[in-house]
Amino acid sequence: MLVVSDEVREAVEERRPVVALESTIIAHGLPRPDNLQVALELETLVRGQGAVPATIAVLDGRARVGLDKEQLERVANDEGMRKLGHRDLAPAVAAGASGATTVSGTAFLAARAGIRVFATGGLGGVHREWTTTQDESADLGLLARTRIAVVCAGVKSILDVPATLQRLETLGVAVAGYGTDRFPGFYLADSGHPVDWTLCSPTEVAVVLHAQDRLGGPEAALIVANPVAEDEQLDPALHARVLDEALRACAERGVTGQAVTPFLLDHLVRHTDGASLRANLAAVRGNVRLAARIAAAWSAS
Ligand code: PSU
Ligand code: MN
Image (tube, rainbow, N blue to C red):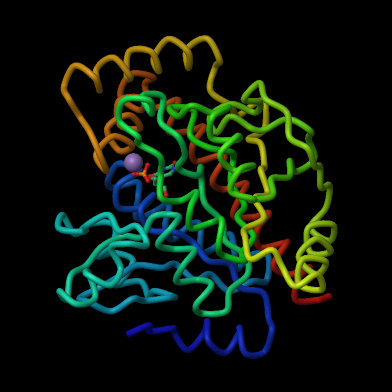
């Protein structure tokens, strides 16, 4: 059921550095044809730091950890790719379906394959209309019971950021700023909210992972919140204005459920002349590079 590529399996067995990469950002988070280039580039960035990339997806009913080029092409270009959170994995496997995995689906499969470090763009979280829709990403609940380090640029700014931070606290998920005591704002370097812990090097992150193991838990993720560089962030005023419009458009068109996140991200790309896409990519690249260095520190220790 779980097909781990030879390269990834050997690296895990030999305790060499491996970085899990999610596929939803490729299939549903980025426009074509850039998305395939990005998928390939992220894998190259991981290799450039001496680690093995493990992009994760479900193809024809097989949960795959580590994709070859042809499989990456399918994730990027196949119109029929579904979006799979962890609850969708068993039904997708049973149906022989194909889909890209979200943070929750990816983290679940990565942990099953013995991978400890995972890089993504931004986590899902609590949506702003939570009081009426109860829309909270399944990412949070899964991360609350999965021992994996997730390098991200915070949570998408389309969400209710303080509510998401509160939920992470309630769920017992540790959050550390990387080189900062501020929680990053995905497209922005600073969400305006503080974090309790700051880690300043890959080795410091690895030391936390070891401490967690020696303590025997908790069985939860460590979120390493890595801000996009200030000169690569989206202009904060533009961000505020276009985000307002996007949220209004989403409500007017009655978009709900799994479609909300892709709708808002796409609206931002189209109404910022691609600037949101550039900031998004800068954040993801930085996260992937850092994750590879953390994976290296983790296997060396
Ligand atoms: N961040 C991005 N682009 C994305 C996502 C996050 O920059 O496409 C995806 C991730 O896969 C995340 C998912 O797990 O959105 C959350 O979706 P939902 O809110 O439906 O749980
Ligand atoms: Mn949702």
